[in-house]
Image (cartoon, rainbow, N blue to C red; front, side, top):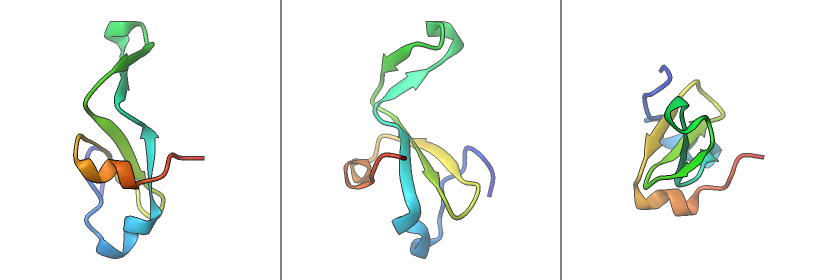
Length: 64
């Protein structure tokens, strides 16, 4: 798996964390926080990093 591709391993869901919740940081905003419908998630067991606006994000803990 590579960055930009969601983790599809069902047993990994317990290892998902939210890196950026309902926001975005981009060059267009000077890398300042901009509110967004999307959140960035990461699987701590594989290299998957993805953005989604799915409702299940509310059940995933923030990264430590």
